[in-house]
Length: 551
Image 1 (spheres, rainbow, N blue to C red):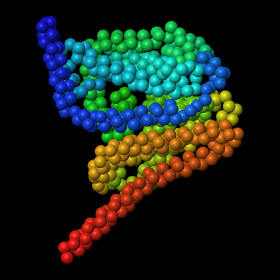
Image 2: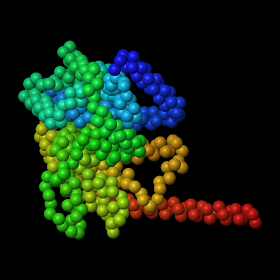
Image 3: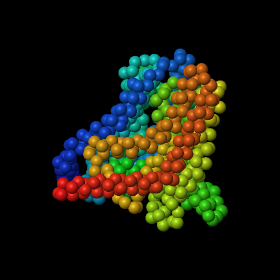
Image 4: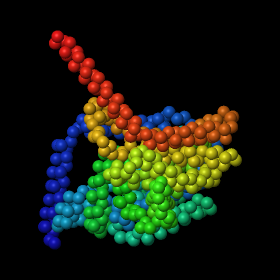
């Protein structure tokens, strides 16, 4: 291909993108865009301010500071190794780029330099990842500054630098792994090897691959010049990945373009269940063709029991490992909340919500087939509540993993008793929030939902926020128990008795959620009938007044 044709193609691509950007700006409703920014600011900014300003935690003891110096770099380095391993895994499965289908068909198949065509999407991917890392890392650093020695500004900077490095490692590793066409088994093996190495470094206090990057997160207390290598390596990986964009697979981009379009639509509709499914498809996480354990066929109500277990027994090993990591993370957050970092109970609730979304696969599969479910000679609520039994039993081993994590990380001799009492209701409440998220999006085949369209924009926006946050609030309520137990301990009361009371409350809330799943359709129908009767009475009174005024 001659240099003139290449230059002509690049100029055409630049003109095309300028025209598309101009059209998008022309069609943009600025009031709606500003209103979305307003809602996002309330959702995330308000939560950050509440978590960092409202919660006043005391400074940690000097012995804890010594432990952080000793174990912190290796423990935080585990996050860096996990980010790198996740990036390699994403690249081996076609990630991390996802462009529009029109660009795949008309731009990448045209005589245009592929790196030129993909440079902007790749840069935008790195920019969005780094922005998220800076935001989350800065928030975490601000929370750490309330309890650790050092100024708040230094902790915000160190947290933001750490989050930025994690994002760069993920995006850069994914770009390079995709360009090198790393096989999936090699990516999994490399990630497992690095994680095992870092785990050994944490246990034996030896040098690990992520210790330097983990040490960067502690710059709020002390600074080491060698820690700058972490961000440099992350940025270098991204640069190498950008230089190798010509090796990007068109087949992978074509497959991901359609999935990402569906994913964006699902996010717009607040359909978290569909978001989870599409994320699994993006990562090519397929269920097993045969279950790990096959149960015998049975009739009657045992059919639901068998279907539920077979749904869980078809989980691939990667999903099981992810659920184990979520349980370990939730247990560690519970210990941190008990030790004084109160805001960590929010993270624990979020992790248990994600764990519940994974475990409630039988319920999700039933929701995904509304036509078949409506054809059964059984009320939908009764069928859905039966699908909660198998996931509740399946979550017991993960509750035990959380207990083991709490016992290992806690220095309190009574940690085993408190963790054993709180574990199961806390995990079940996290799954209860996931059940609310799944069931609330179940289609209503009897009528169309038009109530929200009659609301003013302010009420409609707040209703959307409440519907989105309600499942997370339910999950977070289950994690508040550890804060209540800590308050009892500080007041000199028995932590075991406090844990028992919290457990009773958590079990009652879990039972209430199951009752809501069973009676939701009946309660909605009763509410609709009440509203219809109210409108009918109002119409009759209006007609009577009109008739009286005429006479």
